[in-house]
Image (tube, one colour):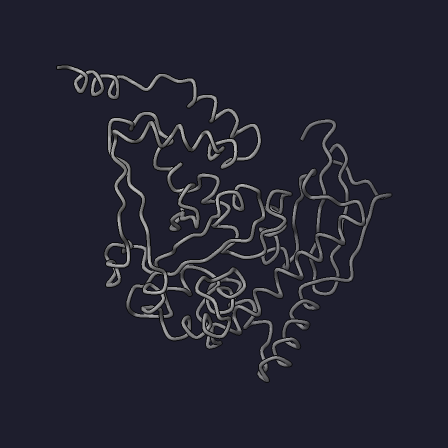
Length: 328
Protein backbone atom coordinates (compact mmCIF):
# COMPACT_ATOMS: atom_id res chain seq x y z
CA UNK A 1 0.00 0.00 0.00
CA UNK A 2 1.50 3.32 -1.08
CA UNK A 3 1.72 6.37 1.11
CA UNK A 4 -1.00 8.17 -0.87
CA UNK A 5 -3.47 5.27 -1.25
CA UNK A 6 -7.06 5.37 -0.10
CA UNK A 7 -8.91 2.11 0.44
CA UNK A 8 -12.51 1.57 1.47
CA UNK A 9 -13.45 -1.32 3.76
CA UNK A 10 -17.08 -2.27 3.14
CA UNK A 11 -18.82 -4.56 5.60
CA UNK A 12 -22.04 -5.90 4.06
CA UNK A 13 -24.07 -7.25 6.94
CA UNK A 14 -27.59 -8.48 7.42
CA UNK A 15 -29.37 -5.14 7.82
CA UNK A 16 -26.71 -2.50 7.17
CA UNK A 17 -23.62 -1.91 5.06
CA UNK A 18 -20.86 0.02 6.80
CA UNK A 19 -17.92 1.80 5.18
CA UNK A 20 -14.58 2.73 6.73
CA UNK A 21 -11.86 4.68 4.91
CA UNK A 22 -8.21 3.67 5.28
CA UNK A 23 -5.64 6.39 4.64
CA UNK A 24 -2.07 5.16 4.37
CA UNK A 25 -3.26 1.91 5.87
CA UNK A 26 -4.76 3.57 8.97
CA UNK A 27 -8.47 4.03 9.74
CA UNK A 28 -9.85 7.52 9.20
CA UNK A 29 -12.45 7.63 11.98
CA UNK A 30 -13.85 10.92 10.63
CA UNK A 31 -14.95 9.13 7.46
CA UNK A 32 -17.46 6.46 8.47
CA UNK A 33 -20.56 5.80 6.44
CA UNK A 34 -23.52 3.46 6.90
CA UNK A 35 -26.43 2.37 4.70
CA UNK A 36 -29.63 0.72 5.83
CA UNK A 37 -29.11 -1.90 3.15
CA UNK A 38 -27.94 -5.43 3.83
CA UNK A 39 -28.39 -8.98 2.65
CA UNK A 40 -31.35 -9.75 4.94
CA UNK A 41 -33.20 -6.63 3.81
CA UNK A 42 -32.44 -7.61 0.21
CA UNK A 43 -33.67 -11.21 0.55
CA UNK A 44 -36.78 -10.07 2.42
CA UNK A 45 -37.54 -7.61 -0.36
CA UNK A 46 -36.99 -10.23 -3.08
CA UNK A 47 -39.08 -12.85 -1.26
CA UNK A 48 -41.95 -10.36 -0.98
CA UNK A 49 -41.63 -9.39 -4.64
CA UNK A 50 -41.69 -13.02 -5.81
CA UNK A 51 -44.64 -13.81 -3.55
CA UNK A 52 -46.68 -10.91 -4.97
CA UNK A 53 -45.84 -11.79 -8.58
CA UNK A 54 -46.02 -15.59 -8.51
CA UNK A 55 -47.95 -16.44 -5.32
CA UNK A 56 -45.08 -18.63 -4.09
CA UNK A 57 -43.00 -18.39 -0.91
CA UNK A 58 -39.20 -18.47 -1.11
CA UNK A 59 -36.54 -17.82 1.51
CA UNK A 60 -32.92 -16.73 1.66
CA UNK A 61 -31.66 -20.26 0.97
CA UNK A 62 -33.53 -20.34 -2.35
CA UNK A 63 -32.06 -16.96 -3.27
CA UNK A 64 -28.50 -18.00 -2.36
CA UNK A 65 -28.87 -21.20 -4.41
CA UNK A 66 -29.92 -19.18 -7.46
CA UNK A 67 -27.07 -16.67 -7.12
CA UNK A 68 -24.55 -19.48 -6.64
CA UNK A 69 -25.77 -21.25 -9.80
CA UNK A 70 -26.83 -24.33 -7.84
CA UNK A 71 -29.73 -26.63 -8.69
CA UNK A 72 -33.08 -25.37 -7.45
CA UNK A 73 -36.69 -26.48 -7.65
CA UNK A 74 -37.75 -22.99 -8.77
CA UNK A 75 -38.56 -22.55 -12.45
CA UNK A 76 -36.56 -20.35 -14.81
CA UNK A 77 -38.94 -17.38 -14.74
CA UNK A 78 -38.71 -17.08 -10.95
CA UNK A 79 -34.92 -17.48 -11.06
CA UNK A 80 -34.70 -14.65 -13.59
CA UNK A 81 -36.88 -12.46 -11.39
CA UNK A 82 -34.58 -13.08 -8.41
CA UNK A 83 -31.46 -12.21 -10.40
CA UNK A 84 -33.00 -9.01 -11.72
CA UNK A 85 -33.92 -7.90 -8.22
CA UNK A 86 -30.41 -8.65 -6.93
CA UNK A 87 -28.87 -6.65 -9.78
CA UNK A 88 -31.22 -3.77 -9.05
CA UNK A 89 -30.48 -3.91 -5.31
CA UNK A 90 -26.71 -3.93 -5.90
CA UNK A 91 -26.99 -1.08 -8.40
CA UNK A 92 -29.04 0.95 -5.91
CA UNK A 93 -26.40 0.29 -3.26
CA UNK A 94 -23.64 1.53 -5.57
CA UNK A 95 -25.58 4.71 -6.32
CA UNK A 96 -26.21 5.38 -2.63
CA UNK A 97 -22.54 4.80 -1.82
CA UNK A 98 -21.57 7.38 -4.45
CA UNK A 99 -23.96 9.86 -2.80
CA UNK A 100 -21.92 9.27 0.38
CA UNK A 101 -18.67 10.01 -1.52
CA UNK A 102 -17.74 6.34 -1.76
CA UNK A 103 -16.91 5.80 -5.44
CA UNK A 104 -15.60 2.29 -6.16
CA UNK A 105 -14.67 3.23 -9.72
CA UNK A 106 -11.78 5.38 -8.52
CA UNK A 107 -10.79 3.76 -5.23
CA UNK A 108 -9.93 0.16 -4.29
CA UNK A 109 -12.19 -1.60 -1.83
CA UNK A 110 -12.03 -4.54 0.55
CA UNK A 111 -15.33 -6.35 1.06
CA UNK A 112 -15.97 -8.14 4.34
CA UNK A 113 -19.02 -9.69 5.95
CA UNK A 114 -21.23 -12.53 4.75
CA UNK A 115 -23.08 -10.40 2.22
CA UNK A 116 -19.90 -9.52 0.37
CA UNK A 117 -19.84 -13.00 -1.17
CA UNK A 118 -23.06 -12.23 -3.03
CA UNK A 119 -22.45 -8.63 -4.07
CA UNK A 120 -18.66 -8.21 -4.28
CA UNK A 121 -18.15 -9.14 -7.94
CA UNK A 122 -20.96 -6.92 -9.17
CA UNK A 123 -19.55 -3.90 -7.38
CA UNK A 124 -15.90 -4.61 -8.12
CA UNK A 125 -16.39 -4.63 -11.89
CA UNK A 126 -19.10 -1.98 -12.16
CA UNK A 127 -16.96 0.47 -14.09
CA UNK A 128 -18.32 3.37 -16.12
CA UNK A 129 -18.02 1.51 -19.44
CA UNK A 130 -20.50 -1.13 -18.31
CA UNK A 131 -22.95 0.99 -16.34
CA UNK A 132 -25.59 0.53 -19.03
CA UNK A 133 -25.18 -3.26 -19.06
CA UNK A 134 -27.72 -4.71 -16.68
CA UNK A 135 -27.93 -8.27 -17.96
CA UNK A 136 -25.77 -11.18 -19.03
CA UNK A 137 -26.81 -10.76 -22.67
CA UNK A 138 -25.77 -7.10 -22.73
CA UNK A 139 -22.42 -7.90 -21.14
CA UNK A 140 -21.58 -10.72 -23.54
CA UNK A 141 -22.69 -8.58 -26.51
CA UNK A 142 -20.40 -5.76 -25.37
CA UNK A 143 -17.55 -8.22 -24.97
CA UNK A 144 -18.12 -9.57 -28.48
CA UNK A 145 -18.13 -6.05 -29.90
CA UNK A 146 -14.76 -5.25 -28.34
CA UNK A 147 -12.97 -8.47 -29.25
CA UNK A 148 -13.70 -10.80 -26.34
CA UNK A 149 -14.05 -14.42 -27.51
CA UNK A 150 -17.67 -15.43 -26.87
CA UNK A 151 -20.23 -17.87 -28.22
CA UNK A 152 -21.97 -15.08 -30.13
CA UNK A 153 -21.67 -14.37 -33.83
CA UNK A 154 -21.92 -10.83 -35.23
CA UNK A 155 -24.56 -10.01 -37.85
CA UNK A 156 -25.88 -6.79 -39.34
CA UNK A 157 -29.13 -5.62 -40.87
CA UNK A 158 -27.17 -3.53 -43.39
CA UNK A 159 -25.82 -5.13 -46.61
CA UNK A 160 -23.38 -2.20 -46.89
CA UNK A 161 -21.93 -2.88 -43.44
CA UNK A 162 -21.67 -6.56 -44.35
CA UNK A 163 -19.80 -5.61 -47.54
CA UNK A 164 -17.41 -3.50 -45.47
CA UNK A 165 -16.44 -6.44 -43.27
CA UNK A 166 -16.03 -8.65 -46.35
CA UNK A 167 -13.58 -6.20 -47.96
CA UNK A 168 -11.76 -4.47 -45.09
CA UNK A 169 -8.76 -6.81 -44.70
CA UNK A 170 -6.10 -5.93 -47.28
CA UNK A 171 -4.26 -9.19 -46.60
CA UNK A 172 -7.09 -11.10 -48.29
CA UNK A 173 -7.58 -9.08 -51.49
CA UNK A 174 -6.21 -12.07 -53.40
CA UNK A 175 -9.17 -14.21 -52.22
CA UNK A 176 -12.92 -14.15 -52.78
CA UNK A 177 -15.00 -12.66 -50.01
CA UNK A 178 -18.20 -14.02 -48.50
CA UNK A 179 -21.35 -12.44 -47.09
CA UNK A 180 -23.64 -14.80 -45.18
CA UNK A 181 -27.39 -14.16 -45.31
CA UNK A 182 -30.10 -15.77 -43.20
CA UNK A 183 -33.86 -16.15 -43.26
CA UNK A 184 -34.65 -15.44 -39.62
CA UNK A 185 -38.28 -16.53 -39.89
CA UNK A 186 -37.15 -20.04 -40.85
CA UNK A 187 -34.68 -20.07 -37.95
CA UNK A 188 -37.45 -19.03 -35.56
CA UNK A 189 -39.62 -21.91 -36.75
CA UNK A 190 -37.18 -24.31 -35.05
CA UNK A 191 -37.13 -22.52 -31.70
CA UNK A 192 -38.42 -24.23 -28.54
CA UNK A 193 -42.13 -23.51 -27.91
CA UNK A 194 -41.46 -21.13 -25.00
CA UNK A 195 -39.24 -18.94 -27.18
CA UNK A 196 -41.65 -18.95 -30.12
CA UNK A 197 -44.45 -17.96 -27.77
CA UNK A 198 -42.41 -15.02 -26.45
CA UNK A 199 -41.80 -13.71 -29.96
CA UNK A 200 -45.46 -14.17 -30.84
CA UNK A 201 -46.59 -12.27 -27.73
CA UNK A 202 -44.31 -9.37 -28.65
CA UNK A 203 -45.13 -9.59 -32.39
CA UNK A 204 -41.39 -9.68 -33.05
CA UNK A 205 -38.96 -11.64 -35.21
CA UNK A 206 -35.85 -10.73 -33.20
CA UNK A 207 -35.32 -11.04 -29.46
CA UNK A 208 -34.42 -7.98 -27.47
CA UNK A 209 -32.48 -8.21 -24.22
CA UNK A 210 -35.65 -7.90 -22.15
CA UNK A 211 -37.60 -10.53 -24.12
CA UNK A 212 -34.69 -12.96 -23.92
CA UNK A 213 -34.09 -12.30 -20.22
CA UNK A 214 -37.66 -13.38 -19.47
CA UNK A 215 -36.93 -16.94 -20.60
CA UNK A 216 -33.14 -17.40 -20.37
CA UNK A 217 -30.68 -15.42 -18.28
CA UNK A 218 -27.50 -17.03 -19.69
CA UNK A 219 -26.20 -19.80 -21.98
CA UNK A 220 -26.84 -22.53 -19.41
CA UNK A 221 -30.52 -21.72 -19.03
CA UNK A 222 -30.78 -21.24 -22.81
CA UNK A 223 -29.52 -24.78 -23.43
CA UNK A 224 -31.92 -26.15 -20.80
CA UNK A 225 -34.91 -25.02 -22.87
CA UNK A 226 -34.56 -27.91 -25.32
CA UNK A 227 -32.80 -31.24 -25.73
CA UNK A 228 -32.18 -30.35 -29.39
CA UNK A 229 -29.72 -27.58 -30.34
CA UNK A 230 -31.20 -24.39 -31.76
CA UNK A 231 -30.18 -20.87 -32.73
CA UNK A 232 -31.72 -17.50 -32.01
CA UNK A 233 -31.02 -13.90 -32.94
CA UNK A 234 -31.14 -10.94 -30.56
CA UNK A 235 -30.57 -7.20 -30.71
CA UNK A 236 -28.34 -5.63 -28.06
CA UNK A 237 -29.14 -2.30 -26.50
CA UNK A 238 -27.28 0.53 -28.26
CA UNK A 239 -25.10 1.25 -25.23
CA UNK A 240 -22.20 2.30 -27.47
CA UNK A 241 -22.27 4.08 -30.84
CA UNK A 242 -20.58 1.27 -32.72
CA UNK A 243 -23.52 -1.06 -32.06
CA UNK A 244 -25.94 1.46 -33.55
CA UNK A 245 -23.63 2.37 -36.45
CA UNK A 246 -23.15 -1.27 -37.39
CA UNK A 247 -26.90 -2.04 -37.26
CA UNK A 248 -25.73 -4.93 -35.12
CA UNK A 249 -27.46 -8.06 -33.94
CA UNK A 250 -26.08 -11.37 -32.72
CA UNK A 251 -26.81 -15.06 -33.07
CA UNK A 252 -26.37 -17.59 -30.29
CA UNK A 253 -26.48 -21.39 -30.50
CA UNK A 254 -27.78 -23.22 -27.45
CA UNK A 255 -25.17 -26.01 -27.63
CA UNK A 256 -21.52 -24.85 -27.50
CA UNK A 257 -20.42 -27.92 -29.49
CA UNK A 258 -22.73 -27.09 -32.42
CA UNK A 259 -22.26 -24.50 -35.17
CA UNK A 260 -24.98 -22.79 -37.17
CA UNK A 261 -24.27 -25.03 -40.16
CA UNK A 262 -24.72 -28.15 -38.00
CA UNK A 263 -28.33 -27.24 -37.23
CA UNK A 264 -31.34 -28.78 -39.04
CA UNK A 265 -32.23 -25.30 -40.29
CA UNK A 266 -28.79 -24.81 -41.89
CA UNK A 267 -30.52 -24.36 -45.26
CA UNK A 268 -31.69 -20.98 -43.95
CA UNK A 269 -28.12 -19.71 -44.34
CA UNK A 270 -26.94 -18.63 -47.81
CA UNK A 271 -23.50 -17.52 -48.99
CA UNK A 272 -22.99 -14.60 -51.36
CA UNK A 273 -19.56 -14.69 -53.00
CA UNK A 274 -17.67 -11.46 -53.68
CA UNK A 275 -15.16 -12.08 -56.45
CA UNK A 276 -11.60 -11.12 -55.59
CA UNK A 277 -11.54 -9.19 -58.89
CA UNK A 278 -14.35 -6.93 -57.63
CA UNK A 279 -13.08 -6.39 -54.09
CA UNK A 280 -11.07 -3.22 -54.71
CA UNK A 281 -13.85 -1.57 -56.68
CA UNK A 282 -16.42 -2.42 -54.00
CA UNK A 283 -14.02 -1.19 -51.31
CA UNK A 284 -13.52 2.15 -53.09
CA UNK A 285 -17.27 2.67 -53.50
CA UNK A 286 -17.90 1.90 -49.84
CA UNK A 287 -15.24 4.41 -48.79
CA UNK A 288 -16.82 7.00 -51.09
CA UNK A 289 -20.14 6.78 -49.20
CA UNK A 290 -18.36 6.64 -45.81
CA UNK A 291 -19.05 2.98 -45.09
CA UNK A 292 -15.62 2.62 -43.54
CA UNK A 293 -13.85 2.19 -40.24
CA UNK A 294 -14.57 5.84 -39.42
CA UNK A 295 -18.28 5.04 -39.23
CA UNK A 296 -18.07 1.41 -38.09
CA UNK A 297 -15.80 2.21 -35.11
CA UNK A 298 -16.58 5.79 -34.00
CA UNK A 299 -13.70 7.74 -32.49
CA UNK A 300 -9.91 7.67 -32.82
CA UNK A 301 -9.86 3.88 -33.04
CA UNK A 302 -11.88 3.94 -36.26
CA UNK A 303 -9.96 6.86 -37.77
CA UNK A 304 -6.63 5.09 -37.18
CA UNK A 305 -7.96 1.84 -38.65
CA UNK A 306 -9.22 3.68 -41.73
CA UNK A 307 -5.91 5.49 -42.28
CA UNK A 308 -3.90 2.29 -41.78
CA UNK A 309 -5.95 0.45 -44.40
CA UNK A 310 -6.39 3.35 -46.81
CA UNK A 311 -2.68 4.09 -47.17
CA UNK A 312 -1.17 0.64 -46.67
CA UNK A 313 0.30 -1.43 -49.54
CA UNK A 314 -1.97 -4.22 -50.69
CA UNK A 315 0.57 -6.89 -49.83
CA UNK A 316 2.76 -9.32 -51.75
CA UNK A 317 0.07 -11.97 -52.29
CA UNK A 318 -2.27 -9.53 -54.04
CA UNK A 319 0.53 -7.95 -56.05
CA UNK A 320 1.80 -11.34 -57.24
CA UNK A 321 -1.71 -12.45 -58.21
CA UNK A 322 -2.39 -9.14 -59.98
CA UNK A 323 0.88 -9.40 -61.91
CA UNK A 324 -0.09 -12.87 -63.18
CA UNK A 325 -3.41 -11.56 -64.47
CA UNK A 326 -1.74 -8.73 -66.37
CA UNK A 327 0.69 -11.04 -68.16
CA UNK A 328 -0.21 -11.58 -71.85
